[in-house]
Image (cartoon, helix red, strand yellow):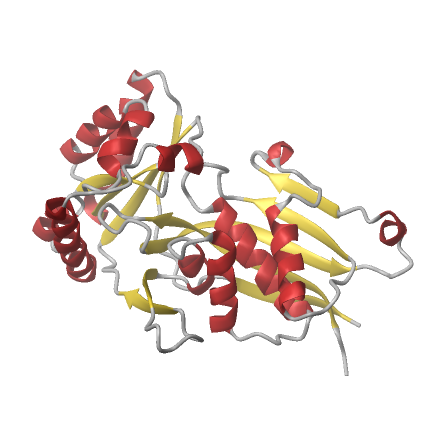
Length: 321
């Protein structure tokens, strides 16, 4: 029986929260990180030194750590710890297509990539749902890792306490093809820790009701593409009013996007990337307007009209023994 010796895993970027869906909704986007795992001979010098063998290419490659603190490596090792096996000696090759620390789920791609790659090399002892539960446990919340693994737009909610082995219920959210996500990625970073640090520990009943209503409207708006519903639905009171002050030029970019035909604009994940939703007819003008608005603030931004990725993490076998 042949043994897989080399696999490649491709994982999409994600955008989380989508306004009122704080920490519970996310969508996969057509930007990707690729991870390659190659089994090494047990006589390799690295086995004696314990050194991680890793290469990184693509945008911002020089900023990625290539030692045991790398999140891809940590997820890979955690998988083998979970199945009570010793991790094999592997070379990791990373190609980056998702910007780092910009609110597009780069850490989620590493977690999902590490788990999926390890599962394949181990002979797939875990199901997709088991991988998902492990990914959520490693990330701490589901909004990025779930769509990164499964694709599409996903809503995650905790399961019933009487079913201890089913911790999460995952609901696929239909996304109308006419609704176009436009991402504006600025040339500065915002750490998740800083973005969470400005949030209040408690919110009013009125704000909780406001977000519950607008999340419900968002789900229907995404499914139908109704512009009036989407324009209202993207409002939020749980995180964006507090975080937008950390993003220079937020109000100017928001006004420019809406004036150009966007339904609205939200913070992607913890930011600083900003996400506008619009229709196909206005996507290019929205992108151009967001770019110009940030330029007027002295900020360079990469702005792209994307699609929702429907496949999630994909893999291919590159070699067998």
